[in-house]
Image (tube, rainbow, N blue to C red; front, side, top):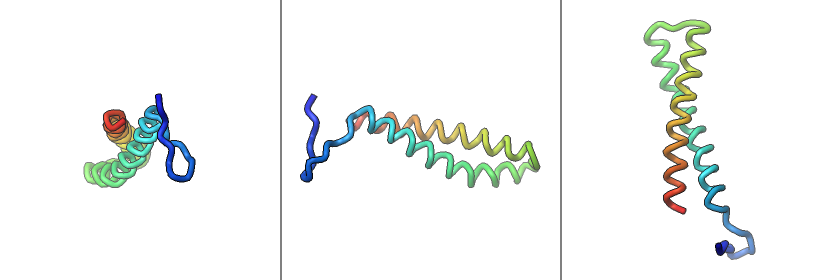
Length: 79
């Protein structure tokens, strides 16, 4: 497999590395958005204390995993 070399001699990341980076970035974006929307949603239905923290954490993990997976798939298609 040929690896493209940039104008200053650096090589481009491999397809697997692009998929990994896509997943991590997608997780970060999904978790950040979910922290905002999940907090308001949990507060609106009356959660407090440990229940609130558990609800926000669960929402963040679900959203981060979903967005990360779709972002990784997108990066895999683009390779």
